[in-house]
Length: 376
Image (tube, rainbow, N blue to C red; front, side, top):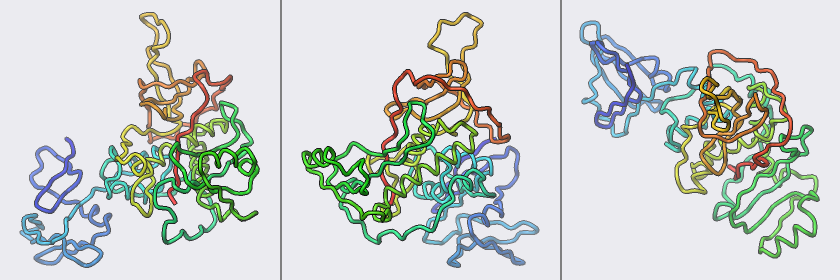
């Protein structure tokens, strides 16, 4: 009939199923095992242990039924029994979060780092073909053990990613991630887009020192190199999964940047970039799958009584300065920003979409990529 959480002392059971008419409260042994717990049954007793060997729950056998009394739990640690997400739920949120690694998703749940994400254990039961195609990489460089800055964005790593072989909807060929915050030090490579008199004069006028990495040594500017790679890999994966044309790469990059700022956890501070900058927990309940079919309320035309009230479109991102969604309308071949949108995120069938024909330049203005900071 529904789901809820049960609190009993220091034991919290998440996402309990309510079944009308069921005579007993039943534990699912498979869900214990899915949480890396050991379950053992003896002739007159049973117990549940964690990986350290500590007994979390102990039960007794009555006739053919093993019973666990939560009132008898004596452990000093809080016990949280978290249900495993269904395969459909796991892949739904994986795609909503721009194909984010399942480890990051579970870290957000356990640390309560975002709002709107169901408190379940998310697992990958098979490979994601789009991730395998879009994220092949070499062995990573080891991160520095200690941070070299004292505040967020004190040191800004920059690099211009591009040019892309295919222009975006707005005719763009490059990616530059940035954020409007005070900066003390700018670190770039020796590319002429940054190493020129105009840039140096501007940086000197605002009191920003400029550091260069050694020539032909991209590892020294590895923070932004890795960040650009992470964004491009996510965008490549999203385009592959949704089977959309390559000229939507800018929308895919912007969406990936938007979701990653609210979902990827900084390894040192254990917070998302959004929380570090805004000092509040982000909400991701409104996230949807990039490239999914959606329907937008037609409030732009004077319709007759029997005209369709909604237009079919393709979801291509979020509006960065207000609560709205960016949608490509198939009928008019334009991109609009609207809050009155419903989404079809059916995971049961992978619908193959034909490439939409998009012409002209976005009438509402050029794409404004979501600001982004490094997670390294």
